[in-house]
Image 1 (cartoon, rainbow over the protein chains, first blue to last red):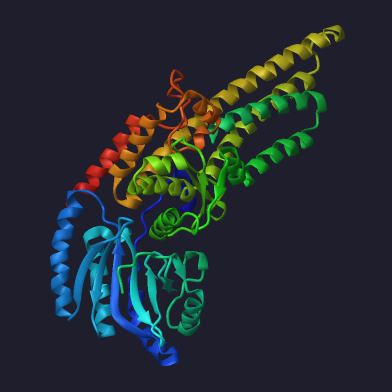
Image 2 (image 1 turned 90 degrees about the horizontal axis):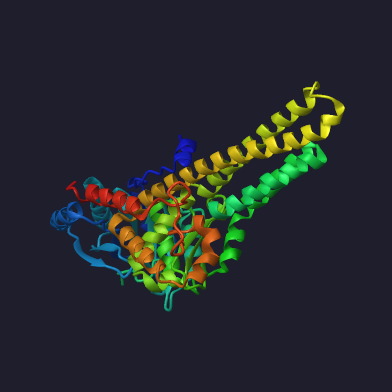
Length: 190
Length: 292
């Protein structure tokens, strides 16, 4: 039906794939064992807020619900908007496993409320042995991960990113097209 | 795209008609006509960019614009097109390229100056929808079919006239040839006009589709609507000369550049009327507004 859809100019919003998120726990173990890269205990879920009453009502209800659920897992949560008009749910938890569970919970709750097509990415923060920060970004629509290591002045540490990719090897599905490793400037994580 | 397409198509029809009369070789004619189409199909991105004097920009040159496109592409799960900026005050944007790998999205400095970032993002998502729907390929093929239909009509009339024999005595031959050519021109003009109307209809339909998908992608139809209103309002304030110069490129555009005093009849327009587009976006907004 893809041909017909192209002919009629129809495209359906993509639904996210969430299950691969749990792979981050294993990947964190590999990164620490092989390269001394540790999670910093922070993660964030990014989505594009939609307009209208439905979204406003749902997001209030959602935030209460999320705070409650996340607290149960022992994590903390805050919500911020960035200058590109995207909303970030920032999670903090010293335990990687709980952090991943919380991130999955936030994602699946957003999906349940019908915001699946609006989900942009999930981000997990890491630091290497010398303290350089990088992030593992999960692209829902692709079901793949990629590393993003911002430097000052909107530059990227490509060497570190490629090292992370090599270290991860088969542990996580890494995005094969480098053109899709898009930058996330102004990430609300330390 | 259709604005240029009409002129090009007309050129084909006249050119091919002359060739048929002169050469009487079908193979050569099909090769030449196909060659032109091939060039247009494969170089649509470069032709449009050159016509608008747009130049590609790197992420360092236009970080905000690139970041917007990056995020929209991640949301929509499509490869990132090249990003270009055209240095003109005309507020507009267009997307071209035969497929997702060769696509270019271009915005003018005029649109960047007039729209707020969220509105510009809405316009970009409309243009990305054109890329996702492969509109350049569809429209090129659609208009080629019209040209092909014209060829078939011409050839059958021609073959009938010459092959039929018994057309009067030999000294009437010249008169007959003149009549045949007249008939050929008439028939091909009718077929071409019909196919032109149909491709325009298709174009308007696809504009609405792109509006719809773009609005759903960003989740805020009202942003696209406000961008439309702003640009359309601004359009009429631009000096007429600029607009006239840009008219052949209309079909590429987000909003057609219509000079005041020159009204597109509804049938020939490449874009649906503003009211129709706003109405659709309003409906979408109401749909999204309903509690989940």
